[in-house]
Image (cartoon, rainbow, N blue to C red; front, side, top):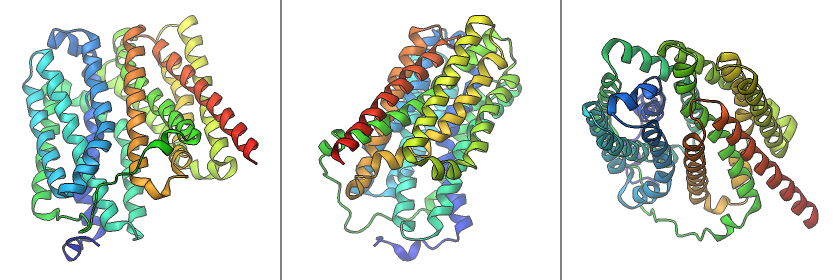
Length: 399
């Protein structure tokens, strides 16, 4: 039971208006920044590798926050974690806008990610506290899933327009201002929901880490999300620096990939019902390999363009949706008694793999070409297919 159940009786639209801004801001801080990435080395007097670090740090911290702030919110409550996280996000955003050199910029970008992670964890913990056994939870999760699909489509366009009209600093001022508005609305309305008898989970993670199914599907999730992350990291340099796109043209091209993902997601349930969890993972990995092959052909025989770089990503986007539709259930189905901790580890492992492997490839290979994307997708999809085959062999051996 919640510690203050009588105080959290808002209508569903009111709840969505209260919670959604924190979900939007956490994702928007990644995507709205993309159009100015190619210009930031010159602006801050640093290298592209350092600017890449500002993308990787943000993503890794969002994953690590699942481990850090989940137990913290169990100990001290959801409200202080959310309020503190939102305040830190706003302050860091304003400091980013005021930065003029690389070291402070990287530091404030890290703090911005810490704040986003805390607010996001507290938001989803509150949803679990209040709506775990209520039908409204399906509506809330569905809306949040749609937000995560639409933000990558619209965020870069908004960033390009802000940068063109008001300069790059306006992007971070806008993020900070939105965070302040969300925080001001939350202060009088976001009541504590932590259960009175809440206790920090002390489950041993040994069974989780020894599970081949957990690793197979977590690696599948990492392959899918990492493919999008590497595309996300390299596309500004490929399309703006090499192909000569304007910031707005780049944003529109990037949005087409998100549009493919949104369209495919509408039919994902039908595909999963037909193919099953394992079959959907197989087809998702095959689509990643096909897209990587098309990228390789385009990079070898043609110059950077929408047809040689973005169109292959449309194929990979379909594979990403097939994959992420089933990986959580596949990885966590044997751990219902420790679902919260298992979910935290699932997201944390994924963010570490994507942030580390993806960043190393973007830095180690020419980051203004399709090679980091093609290599990441090929290697990760190959590893997942090998793990899937071993998993099936172990199931047959036990049968």
